[in-house]
Image (tube, rainbow, N blue to C red; front, side, top):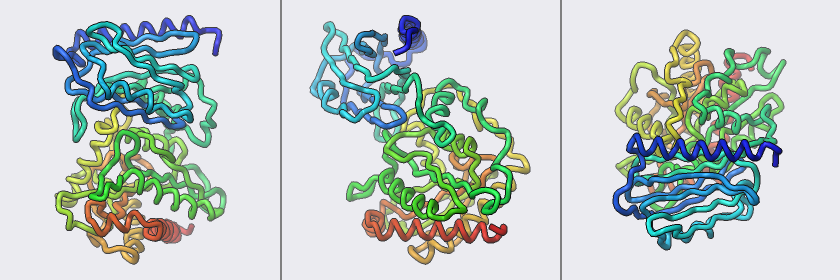
Amino acid sequence: MSSSKPDYLRRRLLQGAAATWLLSVSGVGVAAATSSVIAVRVWPSSTYTRITLESSTPLKYKQFALANPDRIVIDIENVQLNSVLKGIAGQVQTSDPYLKMARIGQFDPQTVRLVLELKQNINPNLFTLKPIAEFKNRLVVDLYPANSNADEADDPLLALLKEYNKGALEKDQPAQGPQAGKVGLDRPLVIMLDPGHGGEDPGAIGKRGTREKDIVLQIARRLRTLIQKDPKMKAYMTRNEDVFIPLKVRVAKARKLRADLFISIHADAFTNRSANGSSIFALSTKGATSTAAKYLAQTQNEADEIGGVSKSGDRYLDHTIFDLAQTAAINNSLKFGKEVLTRMGKVNKLHKNKVEQAGFAVLKAPDIPSILIETAFISNLEEERKLRTAKFQQQIAESVFAGIKAYFATIKY
């Protein structure tokens, strides 16, 4: 631990007091006579650990830090200890890089105290979320490492998340797009793979319980393996584990690593279980090309609210001016999407025979050709079965890889 521990503790105490004061004056988190905690979840990852407490009504809380050992203490008001809260200790994994253990008890008749013992110096980020989708009110506790040893040149994710939480994501973004040099000769083709959803956000769930976030991660890993075997290509992933990453951070990571292509991989659902087939989407700045495309963009853009992000004041891409570079990127996205769609049609039925467009937030890199792939409908019983098989996952990965090569062949790859 650093010698500035007293300053660190004072900062945490002040932030805890500020959080409580903000809750009291804004009304956010004001609870009824008694709130009932109905679910507790712990999501460890190499990037950060997230803890969520889901409740019938908004939770009011206070936080502060203690040392020797390092702990984050959260007092939750107007709550009674129940079996759900008691179960949090059993959810902490020994492999968690940040959280050592969790203890909980009834501190006084109206207050439950949660003590999080830490493995290293941590910057906690606490915020509340309003009900959305199947989730009720949530109190979110994100534990970020205060000091990162990660190689940011290869994976700037943690640094980008920190900037995002400060509301300053845009300041660290490069002004230019993909790196100079002829692709395949002077430098490798850089491809960012984006497995959708993750962590608190499971994505669509099939009738057999198949979670979209798991399937698309498996497909992305298979595609990465194919790409990395080509000496003219290099692949990165927005996430390579079960962790929630905000949409804008996914885009920012692609821009930070100066990607030439951005591929977001999904397996969506529809209210009608008979809907089936693979689809490719590109960004539209003028409205969706179909009602279905508009509906899909709306559901995908809700990922941040479902996965949970604090209202940090982040402005990155909210005010993007769609200039000539954006128009060129969209045109290239349509060309790229067509190459992939043609090849996917050989391994699965196509839902639409053309690349559709809508306002997908995750496709808004202003200078990177970007597509969103709906590999199949996880809500369709037969396609859910196929998505669970290694054979179909590999076929999808191979068809996308073939589409990448075909697209770059048209520009003298």
